[in-house]
Length: 339
Image 1: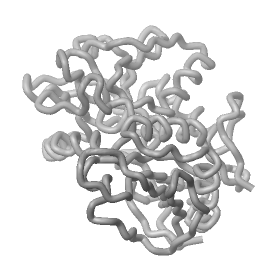
Image 2: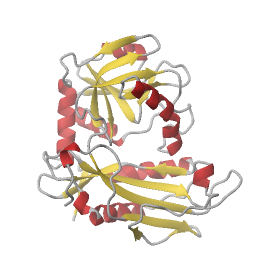
Image 3: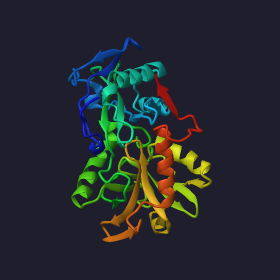
Image 4: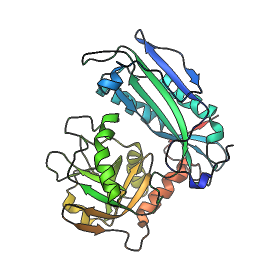
């Protein structure tokens, strides 16, 4: 096992031993290849570079309380990558190629899986891009699928502690009927300007409103939004939002814990009525929000007034993480042990 400071890992890239690759040529996927190189040779006219034919996923492997390695809901990540591929007209990775590449990448880099109890995990990044050369806007005929892994700590440096968020009104993350509901790099490129701006103001992430009316909550940076009030878990309904696998899991978990669930448009004016609010996603799991500031109007709404996460957010977080690490019963069969 690597001599890393597991408890203080950032959420960032750390070099590991191997990555796994596969090529799509002549209308078929080839065999998996293992590489120790961190670099890819790519044609200068590849469609990924010019026309944005690229999509990626993010999932995690966990070292359980029993020492076993667990994947969390990988099939959902596969389905989402398939949907993203369709969205930008790429060849779809087969389920077999996806699963075998993920498992191989995890096993080959097992010494980088953080020990149980450190709060860290092995982040898995599968990505697919157009590697075929084209000049003219059209889909490539060749594609490359890669899986690399890296050990990570919490996405927000605060960990499971309240973060400060700023409402974003100057840019749009995604347009209605655009690519907001698929996981492609262009969505994240469009968010960089706002992320850099709010970071300079001391906020963890921007909260995006819908592009059409600037009225309804869409996403928080790269995470889904949720609010809790009257024992009800409320999360936005929008065609521009990436379907978060973590959020999907929390919806089921909230119902399992006896809460009501509503997926509906959330007017930004409703924020002050919530008892708890947060962001959720693979990277962050759950990040409770302590303050939401509207920078254009210079006014804030404060949550977590005692500086601690809310009771329901804490219960959901501890239960979900407990399932991921094999500490509590998994009634949904979300985890898969890798032998």
